[in-house]
Amino acid sequence: QSALTQPPSASGSPGQSVTISCTGTSSDIGRYDHVSWYQQQPGKAPKVVIYEVSKRPSGVPDRFSGSKSGNTASLTLSGLQADDEADYYCSSHAGSIHSVFGTGTKVTVL
Amino acid sequence: EVQLVESGGGLVQPGGSLRVSCAASEFNFRSYWMSWVRQPPGKGLEWVANINQDGTSIFYVDSVKGRFTISRDNAKNSVYLQMNSLRAEDTAVYYCANSVAYVFHVWGQGTMVTVSS
Image 1 (cartoon, rainbow over the protein chains, first blue to last red):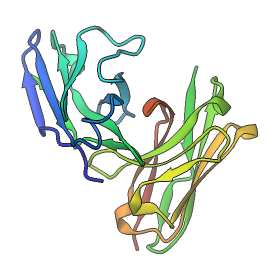
Image 2: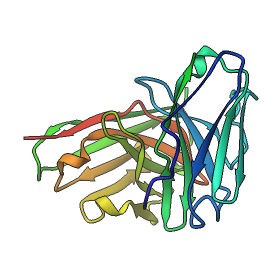
Image 3: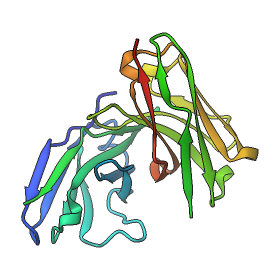
């Protein structure tokens, strides 16, 4: 039950785009389309921003987009805003394991 | 407003027990799977356990199997996590969340559990 692998940090200037990768295996990301992404701002609970690889919950701006290729999922933040500065976690279903989370990526807006 | 509120966290000695609770409001609680997710201080998220709508299907992460028990009371719109034989590595903020198709949609604010002598 190893965590999915994410880069520890990512950054960009306002208006730029940032892409975060999330690498798993053929038992989780590679097998299921149940990949979600969560934004966690300091001192707050996580909030889902992408689910089922590329779907956005109501209220999440279309600047957030998701994709998947093989065992790797990606989250792209376009038109970076100061409010996007947060930790981001991916998550995937993994068979008998309900969910496995990624190691987390801290996004900094320069 | 759809809301989940956790309670029951605190300081407990290694080997001790604690029960945390989560009360739901403004959504059809009995229609959802419910999960517990934890986050050690300064670290990432870890799914801990989940339970289906009527409590007949339950799953745990390996590290808590045999020590933690998840349960729910649909009449009280509440889900619980009974934690026994606690270890220092169980120290974390414990969040409850409802889930649909392995997506955690609504989260509580979390309750801190500290295991220390």
